[in-house]
Length: 193
Image 1 (cartoon, rainbow, N blue to C red):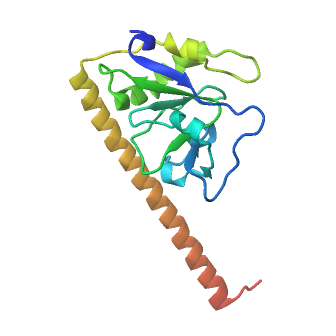
Image 2 (image 1 turned 90 degrees about the vertical axis):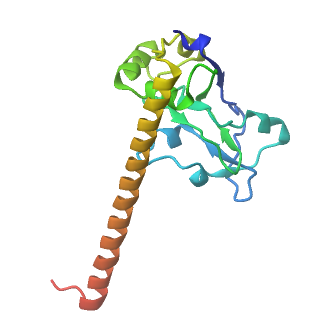
Image 3 (image 1 turned 60 degrees about the horizontal axis):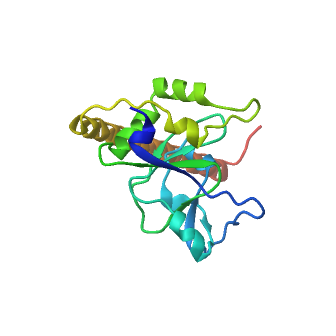
């Protein structure tokens, strides 16, 4: 079934003249393409803060929104599960709000599958800078198992993401420990040629 029949898709606000700058006392967290395509798991509370006027706050993400880049070389989808602070999609992003017959986590999982990514690759426009337009995204065919199966797939994907996050954190801790021990060895024993 076409995504247009299953979800609402909107493009993120693009500030053409002066995009909001990072500000320590900002009122929202800013989500950009670089955050979606980073090699580490995305955590909303690590996103930079920006200051937005009241008129733009209605464009912040809602729990269950799925975000996917609309430009670039990678089209990794991310599920926004909610946060204690507003998260604002900034720049070249598509925001998908699934309807009641489509589980949001299932949709993010589905969009990230190799076969779906290959189909998305065929939908891209542009020669030097690739683009996934809202119109093209709305035509994407989505495989629709019953909602119960979608939720089972969602749970498995959530477990996999938790495992990936734990492995990433363990790797960070290993690197920090090795750096600390190396520093201690250099301080205690000096350097010998």
